[in-house]
Image 1 (cartoon, rainbow, N blue to C red):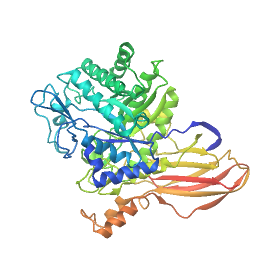
Image 2: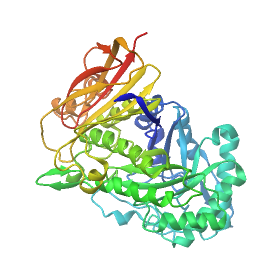
Image 3: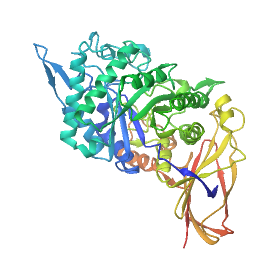
Image 4: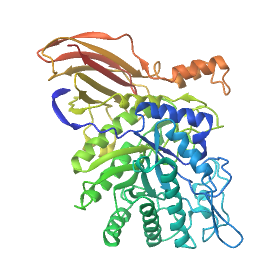
Length: 521
């Protein structure tokens, strides 16, 4: 790492999260997890969720949620009820997490095909079973626009203009696949009405979209941006989704990071091709190792352990690299993972915590949150080059590299040892050279945080306890403690000579380390 070669500000792109199930947010486990997210960067963490306008009594289920925000009386007059929506937003705001407002889905009283409405999906069901009456266009676009206006107006009145100006507002989710059961043109119309409504309530509101699936979604992203140009629909940020593609090979999980990075690369290329949009902030509205957080299966066996942690570290670093390559303004990459209430702990869902117990991957974000200042140039003899990773993933030798930052006299190095195949392998013996330090000689203090089988890993502790489905209070306390970010031994002093210092680290496969180096006066 060369502290004399800054690459620009290291943006905290990690600070966005989301989930299908909004009603989990104000339940005890959900509220606890929101608190953990908010603590990492208070009032700068954002949460996006589906189903904020879906009709129902608020009872949660997998890939489902509801608020009953809109119903109609016998004469077809609107009835607005913001009670549950407010509970969802309040749960985050009280814990330092702001809304990334997804305007959707379609209330039953407005849907052109309201029956069947609520699905009964389980992980054993087919994905297409979820696309019921909530996914259809409105029977009355004027009523749709007024609903969104009344909602945005209510938010301004309840939370204040200055607060709501900091939120993001976008329409729907993945309208290029069956989440939207209308035409592309009907979605553009839906979006225009929604954005017009938000801007009527708050003219300076931050609005964007389209949260398209599959990177650029074929021609969808380009057509959306072209439509906004022609229609004059404001665009303050651009959003799309990118996913990996894990599979089972030879009886073990093999991740698909190349699929994930190529989604991002294609979308960045489209955005960079629009001069008037190239500098707009980009939030990758869902950015994950695969697509379905509530699904289960053998190819998803990476989720509970450190494979998810090392994948997250390696992939986030490459998101920064891709943004720099295309010259676009990446503001965030949203992790679509939260928690599933009333489900078995470590049950194979893609989540950050379960049963109030933090998963190893959450500690990767805790590491990210400790980094600030300028991103530094990193050269690693064991890194997989970006183009090679996009072409064939990490299938031969592992990817051993780092993301580094410098903020005053505080240098952070986040290092990972990632391989796509979830099989045992030797440790990486890392010789780390810190160069260009803002101190010629003397001492520096090193704090070492670690995620591996023995650190920051409640899953391994849970297995050692016999995998109890219902931990005792003592076991629960043990697991909650094991789920926190752990230090790897006591802080040490290292010698600085000629503005450089060496550090040696043994890093197991799929492990992640954060070294915080503080220069003494």
